[in-house]
Image (cartoon, rainbow, N blue to C red; front, side, top):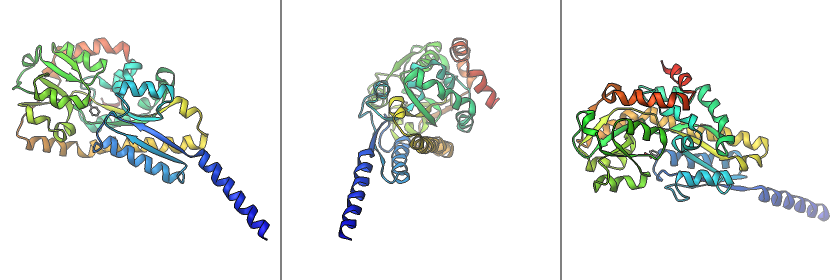
Length: 321
Ligand code: BEZ
């Protein structure tokens, strides 16, 4: 009897030891601050994964560029030094130009149409390019809000923007748009934007409504051009090296839960974009609603350049026409 208990404990110990040996804490990096919708959903993803796997997998979330900027994190994902990220598609498009299709100016009229595109089979099929193109596995899309322009001085026509230094997220499609407009696009990571606008290092910023409100960019601005000129998708990524070592059944769980978490981000903007605008309105800044006509030739020039570089563009357009 005693012997049998002894054997039972030994067996249980062995099972525990093997479970502990297999237990893994994934590191997930992002550039957004702790309070941001992306970061909150990354934390929720970690909790859901731990629960679904009885603690076999946990996720340590590193917000606010703690592990580097997105270009550095993408490199770490390629080598397997980083396991996961919720990353702007902007950064991914620097490696896989086809993803530039998502940034076609005025591709969508509103965030609900952005959701239609990002949830489509066409968009999902594009994720298949990522292992070969960027060394990562894409599990689904999220988003931030549509892009607007906040200016230090009053702006009432596109001529007022000529030569202005406009902060952009560092990626090609948006740089091309602002160059076509005759402005001086100034690539700058998110944490540097407030000071740059405050001290006049830039004349204007390209940003979404949530952050215009939450990070108080209106403190140092006269005008917001409510343009909704571009989508700003995000993608849930796992290092292809890390992915290759995971058992098939674990990939299925991780894939499902990460896709759900990034989609929750997208849905948060669908649900709250109008509230974010209402908050910006409270700041008293002048808000001028504009459309594609305001930018005239720049939109055409962008399409002329990217139609070829991003052949998926026409299929995405067809989804919301
Ligand atoms: C930006 O660079 O403007 C940005 C990055 C991540 C989330 C939202 C905005």
